[in-house]
Each structure stands twice: as structure tokens, then as C-alpha cells.
Length: 146
Image 1: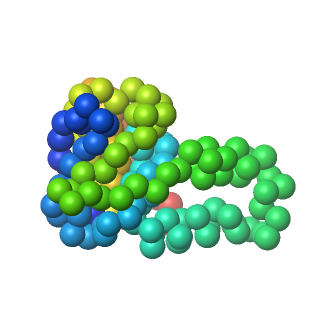
Image 2: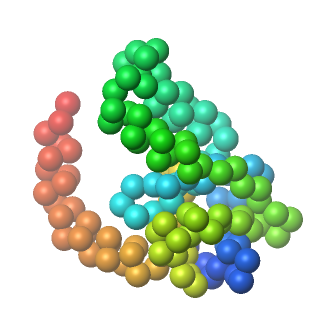
């Protein structure tokens, strides 16, 4: 399970070091794609296959007929890239993805169970403020869902 929050600097070539704990669990080839809430998602290839299989085949073999699914899949699949972890544990964040989330000098890498999210430091801090403020109400809502 991928957990924890780590802050790492981006170098001049848009590379960021993965925490050693994540490297150990994720392997050498990863998939990076736009996430939700102004972050990037980083998946292992195994998890990417699972997620993409569900998105490609949800509800029917003709899932591409549904506009919401087409739109979401175009964003997720169309902007996904495979990235390799180099010999010292860094990945290259494609420029278009870096710009998409306004990532500057520092990235926050957050383990979220099945994936790592990559956030700009200020965006992550702002997100946490809102999430922490609403945590009780969200927990209550989730507790009511069955």
C-alpha cells in the first residue's frame, strides 16, 4: 500500500525523486496521467491495467457511446505517459503535465493506497485546508453509504 506525504524538489529537467518506499513498491516503469483536483496520478503498470480495464469496459463493451465516459477517458488516456524510474530513483514529469497542474519547484508526492498523487506544494496545502475543514461531514456521508 502506498501511503505518506513527501516533498521533493524538481530539477531543471523536470525530474523528481520518488521516495525510496514508493520505488520499492512501484517498480521501474510507471504511468503518469492527469488526476483529479489539480494533481497528477502515478500508477504502477499493474494498477494502470486494472483501472484502464474498468474504465474501458464499464457497463458495456460500447462504453464509448456515453459522452461522460468518452470525455473522462480522453483526458485520462490521451494525456497519459509511461515513465521510467532512473538509476537514482527519479522520474521525468512531462512538461505538458507539469504545466497542467502549475507545478513549480517543489512537488508533494502523496501515497493514496493504489496510486501516488503529485501535487504542487501550494495547491496541496490549499486542498488540505478545505479537506480538513470538511472531514467530519465527509466521514458522516461516507458512513451512510452502503
